Image: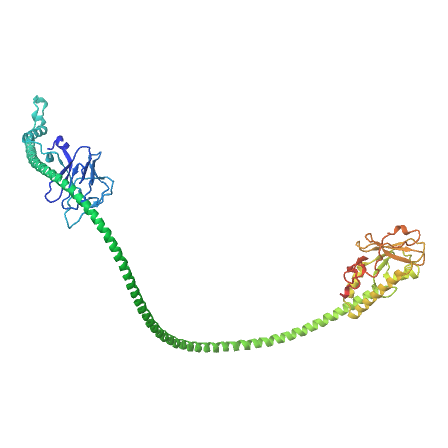
Length: 551
């Protein structure tokens, strides 16, 4: 069995795997272990078969971890460290495991064996220390046997130890024999390890002397290398100048050669393009000929189809035209019949209209005639006795005869214009014939002149009070008549906005008249002082213009 002391003696170490080299580097304690070709490392190694610059002065750093393992770190080297064929990242520690292969410098290669290849191994310190003797091994075996059977080595009363059977003792003895055999094998290994260590120390001493000699030689070589380097640099500069000249010369030659080649290639390309153009032209002509043939065939087929379709359409159109002609003849017959009916209706309407106009004319002539002139009322004026006459007729009557109604002989006290009656007569006259309209217009003009003549005559003298003439519409200004006895009266239209002055009228009663007045137009509806925009005359408004029907 393995004792606790032996377990505690298990340590980590690096075992070199290169040809017959038996170099072993122990990883013990809590201090870091550095490996390289420099002087400031714990284990210095000089490359023999590998180029000198492939191995750095301080190539690898091994540090102990808290859990008892070890880590390796690449010290920012150029060629790096490879763990099991994978390169480590510089400056980042990597935790090692038992059996890992560590290669320094060159990357792994199948062609050559690496010089700096180490394997991480964990073994007893006795296998690498080489300081134990045979007596120590015997005492170790004895201690192991005592530890394996503590009850047999300790005296004591028998009642404290249990009685063991012979079978159990036999098994214990067999186990002890196996342990002793194992210990003997371990002791032999330790002897071999000690011998290897002594041999290694001798080689190390020899190597150290060789290293010192090599260092001296290296210093001399470095001086020589510096000189050589300076010479090489000088030669390099000269060579660079020569190479630059050769480069320029080569560039010029290449430029000329490329120019010639480009021209030649351009010429070849132009010739190829011409040939291709000719070939394409011929192919184009062939394609055009084929297309024309196909187009002609298609056109012939389409012409045939179109002719067939045209024949079908023509037959259909003939049927439609014949049908439309029949419908047209039917429509003409219906239209002729409707025209005849319309003419009959127009004649009947015209006849009815003439009858209506004749009836209205008869009614107007019988009901809307002035008893003085036997004409339709012109500016119908109604007296206070409700009899109606033309304004000119009643004005002439009152000026030449008594101030009495021509019908009932009642004294005239007031007169009123009947605008509604005048408007009705005008609307009815519009439906008259042209001859009657011309007669009406001549009558209106004659009455207008007559009224103007009568108003220019001197007023009659008398003691009667003035007669006020009102309007049937509230928009008209009141008319006043000043009486001067039995000789007649004068008609005036008062206006509050007039700026003309008139002479005083009848004696004694002129205080009721306005001082400013404009004589109105007795022949016009809406008489007043304004100017008509239809005929351009003053004395009436446009709605009552007697010439309104002419425009």
